[in-house]
Length: 94
Image (cartoon, rainbow, N blue to C red; front, top):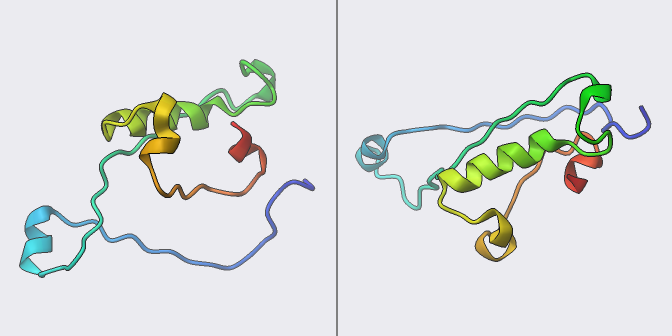
């Protein structure tokens, strides 16, 4: 419990639109999503490959990078920004 993020109030919004809609609305500098990934491993920590690693993060990242045409082993040279869910510090360590 000491490693959980504090309760806070915030919000975010993401508007997804087709390329046709972007052109119709004359949106300048749209951001294109080229890859997404999702994964889940066993919720019971005793069944995980390693107790200290969150492999679902790795699996989801690999799926997103593959869809985007990126190489997981060279990812630091291929992207400029990554936004991560930060509820637990262990997420960054996976």
